[in-house]
Amino acid sequence: MAGRVITVTSGKGGVGKTTFSANVSAALAELGKKTVAVDTDVGLRNLDIIMGLENRIVYDLVDVVEGRCRLQKSLIRDKRVATLHLLPAAQTRDKSAVSPDAMEKICAELRQMFDFTIIDSPAGIERGFQNAVIGADEVIIITTPHVSAIRDADRVIGLVEAADKQHIRLVINRLQPALVRRGDMLDIPDMLDILAVEPLGIIPEDETIVISSNRGELAALTNTSPAGQAYKNIARRLLGEEVPFLPLETSRGWLQWLTRLFKSN
Amino acid sequence: MPTALVKFSGTDYGLLLRLEWEAALPQLLVELEEHLQQSRSFFAGAQVFLEIGQRPLLQQDIEQLALVLERYEVTLRGVISAPAGHERRPPVLPPLPELRTSLHVERRTLRSGEKIATEGHIIVLGDVNPGAEIIAGASIFVWGSLKGSAYAGVPDRTEAVIAALHLAPIQLRIAGYIARPPEARAAAAMGPELARVDRNAIVVEAWERSRAFQQRG
Image 1 (cartoon, helix red, strand yellow):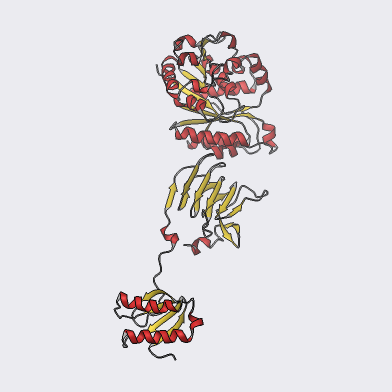
Image 2 (spheres, rainbow over the protein chains, first blue to last red):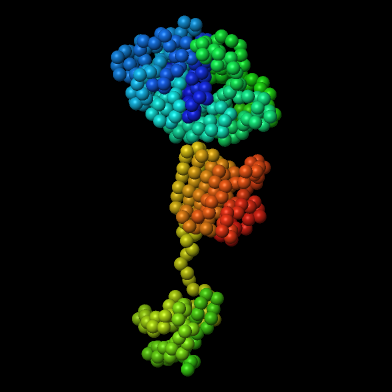
């Protein structure tokens, strides 16, 4: 078996990488794919909390790298979805505890064990980012409709392109259709114009995400909120299905614009 | 008193010195010296071109002439050896620096944090995104949107220009001049534009209206 290794990254912090990684991993698992979510944010681990698996951690990524346990033993199996797994980061060390070489080896091993390996990367463009990207086949860039997030996403796309990763896709998170309609938020065509990568999904701002994240519940599994639906749609698009974008009303007919963009690809 | 053997005349590019080569060189030198002495203050600091027609001239002859001229603070800028009748042809000057400038072509979009710098011209076939930076010793042309920063003519070539299909930069610099777009400038619907230095400021004008590019070759 040779699965897909997909890294989720953004450059900027706080745009929703971890929530995205957790929910898309869960949605893929629920669609029957054997999936592992990997937390590479050594020293500032979060993915386990969002997934509600914090209290089950025994071994972590650094234990594997330093040979204290086998990879298989560090994986936590989710109780809600049997095909969902987590490889947690260490909380007591920092990013230099893992080398890009070691990370590449772990990715190669996970590729043999899982259909999907979803790697959640830390903010920034330093060692942690390199670790997260080195073993990936595909990269998903997350941004929010903020000028600073777009700028960082653009920088990261440049770095990912320089690392010769061919398959790069974009997710726009926390879009507020009402603000876009009033012209107070960046419009989707404007963002795609700058970043010029294929869009994979658009996730609306949704307060139920805050609540479910805090409880360690996964929106993609437990509710039918707009954001939860968007995560599921993204998972299906990753599997190659053609899923129409959510009908978020905006002023400039960006849906037609997106359709055109897809057709031209 | 001036004689018919030595004659100075003004031209577009400087003073032209003509000698009657039928006379022997020593005689010419004496006559030249007399000529210069008579109008010393007029010749001081002047630059002259020596017209020799089709006459073959030894280097030492020219050196002797130059020595006399130097004594009167006159610089020998060049020797014109065109046939008679073509004496107003300008002297052959060294090639303009612009013609010797190298050209770098970047076939991709420059993203935030990327920076390219060359001593010559730069052509980008793609966009320059916000946060990207281009630095050129000469001119910059972007076949795409210029939304980052561009510094042309580094450090002091004011004849350099910056042109783009869509010019919406964060900041422009040409030689020592800095400009940033006015706040109210509409981002969309602008055609190709060119920025250049005019009367100690950077001006931006529509490509069609700008003749600067043609003038600058």
